[in-house]
Length: 86
Image (cartoon, rainbow, N blue to C red; front, side, top):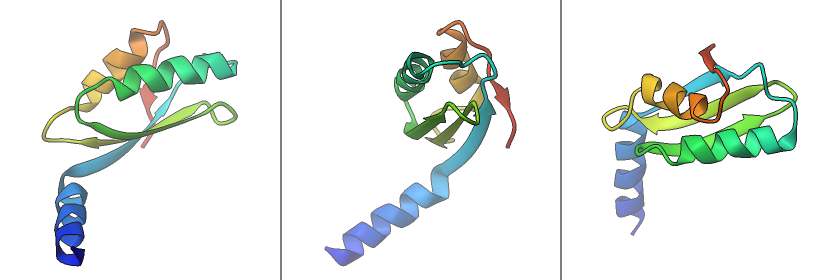
């Protein structure tokens, strides 16, 4: 079981990337929820954190399934603009 978990972790780590996206227009908890839900719907996204105080979304994704443009498009579908910062 430990070997299987280790193999899974290594596989996910090899293809997983992280990007930080600034969403300057966020101003309330509803904004963060809408953006988080939109990003989670993108196939290939594995983890999303959206923080209102810093107005950023941190997204972990499988780069073999999705690219940053798809994530930015998901944010735009909520009427917000995202800008990659990291």
